[in-house]
Length: 203
Image (cartoon, rainbow, N blue to C red; front, side, top):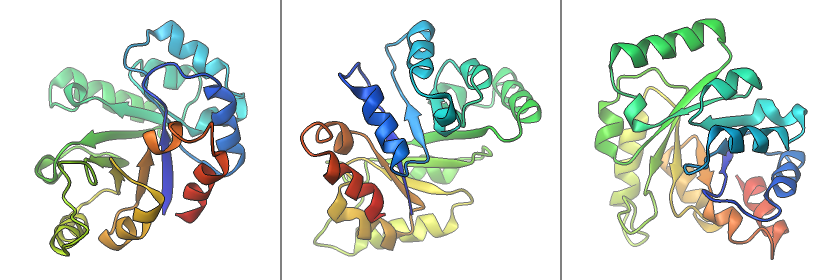
């Protein structure tokens, strides 16, 4: 089961060296998500990461940077998932010109995931373990519901939201391809980097 790390949404001290350390210790995919940053800031961030790791980065927005820096892929915002001709054409062109480029997205509910018709390489299902969770640790029904939906999904699905080390086995049992981690990494990596690395290795 794969662990994907998502950057902090804002600027964070020592983030670049911490990311490089994660790459050096086996992280294969980083989602670069800085919603308030402009293209120049995102470009500078990418250039601060050694080039040999660029093919492990999936960028959220400013999709042309994925081509410029030969990144791993792009993550579509909800507004870019719609079936407008422009969006469909842009996605088709990117895939034709760069067939190895992966395209991902996030769904906030089982219903929206079930209704998806886009061809995506993988997706995140958000709020798996949050206050609006599908899973209750005292009930099997939540896991059974997830297992039922995921078994019918035609694309790999990663759990996102409230995932911690002690929930890895639940995620695995439900049939997720892997997990997406953000706060579980950035809240603890300064004080306990070994614990963060152990989460990645536990999967």
